[in-house]
Image 1: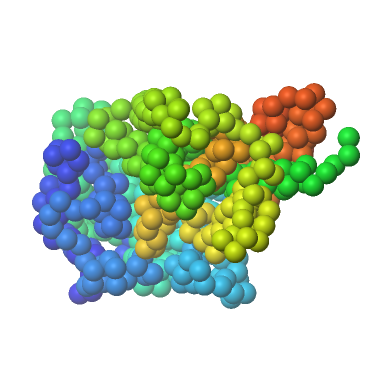
Image 2: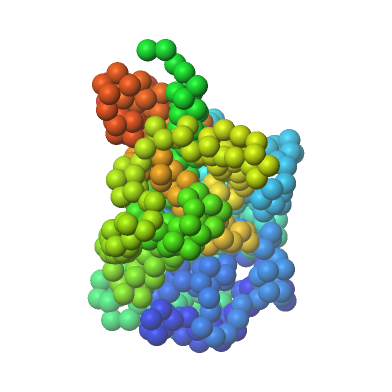
Length: 262
Length: 295
């Protein structure tokens, strides 16, 4: 089996307090993979460590069987929305073009082909009509799609996304998940930090349950069990009832909710 | 009032300084680090005094290097206090630069008798002296005002830097996480910019002073920020705003017979107010007419 990401005995600590403890996981290529866990479980930290943004205390990560340095161009990253300065003087097209920097280098020329690829990425996420708009003058969903377009323009093989559905409208969430599905059918691997238990089961092929330690990692139907979720979310009462509800819904498919949403 | 040779050299030097400050100041502002620029502008004082003591001359390369080093030290110290002492960003800035600036003041007053470095000149600057300090080569050729040459070289270097490295500068400013994800060294560009700010500050020091260099760093950038949503345009407009403020300020100083640096800083403030009120995009007057964001 081909693995997109191999995580070996990974431990990450801030101020000697472990945020990730002894994580060992293999994530398959060509799948839509969700990282689930409570707040402070280390979900973002895991993604940032995979990207090399945070140094690992011990252990290591391999991407497509190689160290990150060798495969940087093939890996793209979509940051959390609140880390971006939305007043920054850049347009939607400027952001999409940044996706090409990984290929042209910082000093190379941006060719017509690069512009076409960026524009094509904007078209895929339905943002080409806003190409010249400053990013602060977009809705939350449009902003998220702009950054997705940048990742697409990079034409990577592995996409790491930190909470792409936070502050996004239902229509965008649906459009984005469809697009991500389409990407996985083309052999791309998509790793998404997710916080919504309700939708996790439907969205992902593969799940990684995290709470500082790795609780479970595997195909979604196998991993998404009450025991695992209880282990992940601990004694959090409201969440436990959520879990109970979810299990209940599992027996009676969520037709009603779906109809309401649409 | 007729414009003579002296006025022209002062105006050109002032404009070049304003452009240098506007370029570095815009990048600082976009990084939400305008105050770090303020800090560096003050903190380089002890560096200047010490370098002056060691080399015995002003605006020598030695002095610029010394000040650049202390500028980087300031940046480093602000970050260290934030990380290791867990101080807030503004507290770290306030602590670092006041300490260094005060050290500079003490050095300066202690050595007042020995060095030809005037306290008033360092604090408030004096553009009017530009034509008096002439660069004469060892062979005796008179090259014109030394400050003019220094600022022109700095201006060209900064322009070249920003044109060549515009992409990494933009990317590391806008989205440092993505920048380092695709392999760009964020700390390198951070310190490159801080080094540029330090050098710019030192060169501007004796001309506009430690305090008013801050106005030149921040005000033109803020004015341009009111007028455009485009990165390249922001840099161009900031330079323009800086240049206009120099011309207007100089005219004002000549008419009212008052401090040139003070007038230029005031002109900068007035320009910002004009942009703030009348900007077609972000101005007070037109803000209500803007199309609402479609969600």
